[in-house]
Image 1: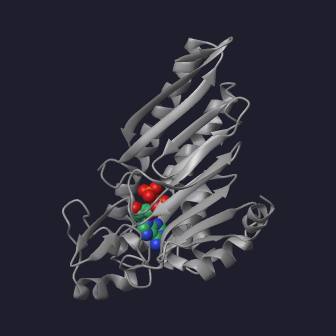
Image 2 (image 1 turned 180 degrees about the vertical axis):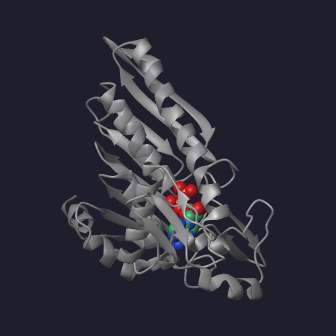
Length: 313
Ligand code: ADP
């Protein structure tokens, strides 16, 4: 820990949720600082156990095993996140759709595997958020189509970051950063100066395309460089267009800045699929949220209020 007067910064990073979780926390005492770091990591692990498709006992895995056959009862937390996800689908013309996984699960980026055209064609009709029926009263979920699978990779990390920040606030923490892969949430500033959060250059691992000073807000980036493989010069990556069942080639990266990490996370995936024009239009209509898009020609595009800020500076 790095001391400064009566308090110090406590930081750690660990691999959880298939990504790197990193936190920096200012605390008045070592007891609080270490407990706060531990609380962040414990929350990430808890969400992973609940929502990971790779853990057989997760609620998400249970849904994917059973919901095509019967109503599956789930926790209020997962229910609420599913409801939010489906709401986001209708607000984004279906660009964000957790049923992308009906085809998306057939991609294995590490093993360089992808479904063939015929398989995609057969399963494409299973991608449709309208197949997912949520029953508010008894907190159950059911799929209306036999081949539906769901996945929360586009929103779970954002949710985990929001939860972690709420836990830190309850502990009395006022300055903190929590990052889960592409999703960052910030409490306060970095004591007298803003946090600086970078957007990676999509084609250069160690280069930043943009660095933004921020405080008391959250920011998420979705990029075509997180999970991908190349075949004959074509990039197969992890953001899937629900219309085609294939990687979306509209842009290289999308960053959303706004108060809720959960929404940033979902919107960054949605705007990635929508592309520059429709994506910027959507964010211009979403109060409190801003977008930075890096298109295929590596040009930057900003949402309206951001454009105004840039013009001033
Ligand atoms: P990460 O933080 O892992 O980069 P992103 O926020 O960029 O995640 O979202 C990409 C993830 O979202 C994919 O790995 C996948 O799990 C999921 N996903 C892919 N396509 C869609 C889609 N059209 N709608 C919802 N989720 C998606």
